[in-house]
Amino acid sequence: MTYNTGVMETEVKQMTIDEFVIKHGLTMTLEPAAANLADAEHPMVGWNVTIVAAGRKDTLTTNYSMGVGCIEKKVTVQGQGVTWERYYGQDVVVYIGQGSFVRGTRRHYFQNSQKEKCMRHVIYTDPIKWDSLLGPRAVGFRPAVPTITEVMDALRSDVAGLDYGFKLWADDCGYDTDSIKAKGIYDTCLEIRGKLALLLGRVGIDELEQCEGL
Image (cartoon, rainbow, N blue to C red; front, side, top):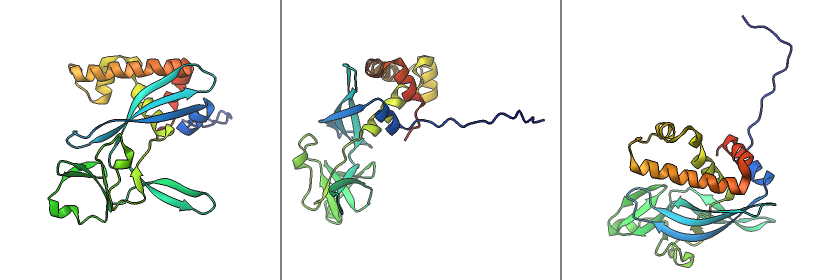
């Protein structure tokens, strides 16, 4: 049986990551880092990230990786000039050497005859030297640059569920509790949470964990 208590229930809206960034006055600087192009299926490009919060002296420095298939296209917007937007078209292929390329997020292998069939391509000869990345047929494209929203959302995921201890965290993430690798990941996440505590305080971490994910 349902009773009408006469009390109006209000839905609590989750804070978005963008709103969280604005509330805490977060800003971010980036430096290219070494890439992991050897990954069998998902080669990555790395960034060194430094995040600063308004009014706090501590900063957070960490690593952030993006798949080499994440690229941006130069776009001219009337009244705003030139900007860069994420591009997901299948006509752009990222060549990473060793007879392979990435389309989307997956690595594929090709014969030399296939290479010339692509409309455009981006070549990763040296991920740290951005000027050497663009192939001759990739004018107007560049490797994607992570946003502070993406980085903070990744940090939110990294620290989720740590308070329950390693075993429950591992079960929730699908790891074997006897795995040394899983324990290493857990310990790394604990280190990240410690950095976040210095940057945001305990209340700030709680707010971040409650934010709506991307």
